[in-house]
Image 1 (cartoon, rainbow, N blue to C red):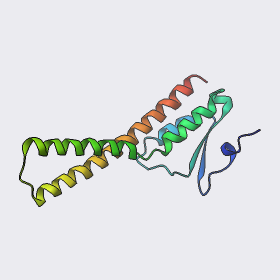
Image 2: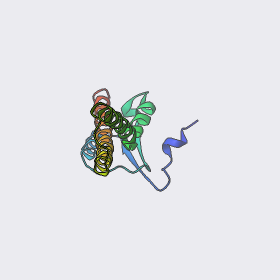
Image 3: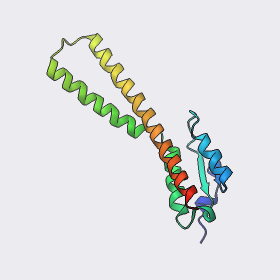
Image 4: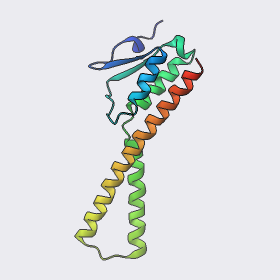
Length: 137
């Protein structure tokens, strides 16, 4: 029975077909762009090119491509919050509005940094996944 999820276009989205050396090179080059990918985009790998485990590789490629970086952002914010609490407990600063605003700014900057790091990590892992697959065709 054919896998219709792989062959169907995503609703209101687009498909990225990777079926040649040029397609792999072009897609890998697009990963260097700072643009955020659409969650409606589906990466489709040519099974003849990527071997018997192409469905697994395709699934992983789609997970990495659609990653928004929120998990990494959440982890970094949690670490920042724990470090802020530890700092307050250890130094006993005078609590003020300015300290609260600085703490909020620190958490916001941590969230943005974590999100950016999560996006960079996903793109690097996707680059590596396709590079490894390109060599084993």
